[in-house]
Length: 358
Ligand code: UD1
Ligand code: UDP
Image 1 (cartoon, rainbow, N blue to C red):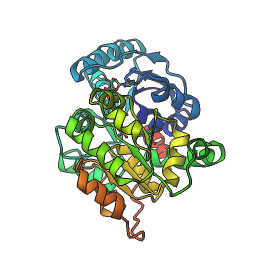
Image 2: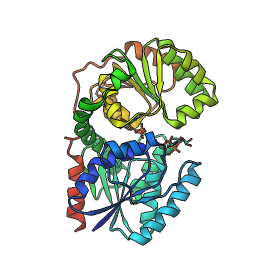
Image 3: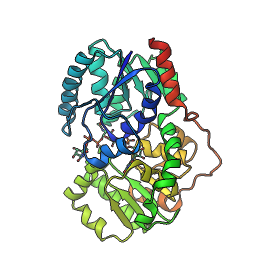
Image 4: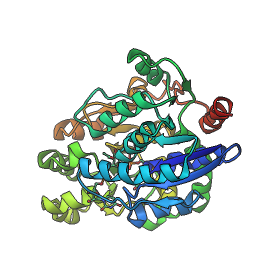
């Protein structure tokens, strides 16, 4: 039995790490990397730090418009699948690489499994929402991280072969945080003390490609006067330069802007932050896993549990709301319902596929 894992973007490398370890106990796995992310610090560093098997195929698609990027991936993935003839294709999350992988497979009548199925923000203007919905509807095996995700699928008529497994990012965090605590020197390197800084990440299209939104966010960071560490995604770096905001950031004494950083350093920065400011899906969850208050720079989130439990607040790109939350937002600290599984989601996924496919 052969499984083709298709990945391409930063969060997918993190998600596949624990799953791949489990899959290889039962199956032959080949890894197809679309090349959506290609800079060293968006790509290779994760393979090195997380001991992920080297991709068997690197398709080198790179950046471009949605149509160009997804279309090129579809063409190139199809060629590999026709040659390799896997029994199943496994895709992760909600990027263009996810959708292209699922579509290429289903059209060749190859079974598709989706890890992180059933997430919904109910905002179709987000490219991720379109990718998720379409991928779920062509998938044969749907691995849902939460009960909410299972309900979302049920409401769309998807009832069979839905498995509630817990979240593979929780598995990845539990496995790697101990290694990170031992080896990371990031706090010393950036001159930071635990709980004396905020950690920020911004990269979603609705914030970066919209000048007013990015200006609001950066102005709030600067005006807050809090010490803020800001590892900037390449997309964000590009727009900060294009809008002339990078000069304001460099002048501001309270902002430490860095290139994207490796996962182990990221976990340590998250764990020790006073608060986290983010529009990332994965970072919202990690804040919750680590019990760090999270302020989300989006109007909606698919990770509703983090908000319901009071650990996450949605402020969009509203400058005043953001500053207020930076100053005042505090979870009550008591409500914590552990809705993301028990840290063994990857084993459950491999086991379910093992039972279903052999
Ligand atoms: C993608 C996903 C998003 C996910 C994010 C994770 C889609 C539609 N979006 O967004 O859901 O949250 O990955 O990080 O799939 N770039 C580089 N070097 C790189 C990669 C990107 O310079 O290694 C720059 C390019 O200018 C590119 C831009 O970043 O045009 C955006 O990259 P892209 O992969 O299209 O989308 P992300 O914003 O990374
Ligand atoms: N991450 C990282 N370095 C960074 C920013 C994020 O290692 O500089 C990790 C983060 O800890 C999480 C994942 O990347 O595990 C989230 O990916 P990202 O924010 O790119 O995408 P999203 O989750 O929004 O799709």
